Image 1: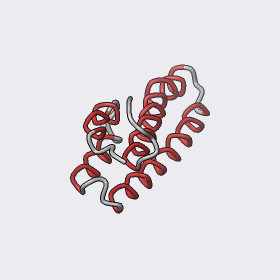
Image 2: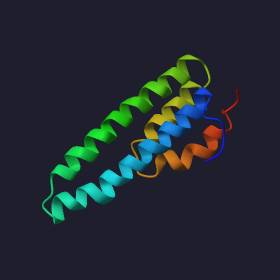
Image 3: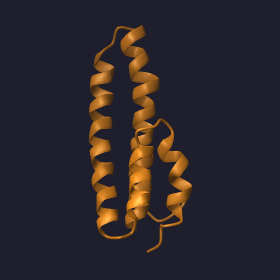
Image 4: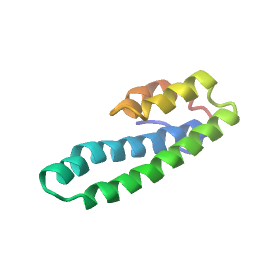
Length: 101
């Protein structure tokens, strides 16, 4: 992931990547631990971290939209992408186009 994280869209990309990693950890590590190793606390911990990161991503995305760095279309696409595993990584290249100071 290239670009400056000092810009609004750069922050959207950074927080999106971190949130995407937390989502993958939730689905790929915490959920199997809960159901196959009888460790429900894994989902509680990783789920809470993911939830906080999701809220942070939503706020950063809203800030970029309200500051007119992202159109409604791209803000919506970025939001929907966070609901899909690997989604933030797929749209990262497209968002890089808007990552100008």
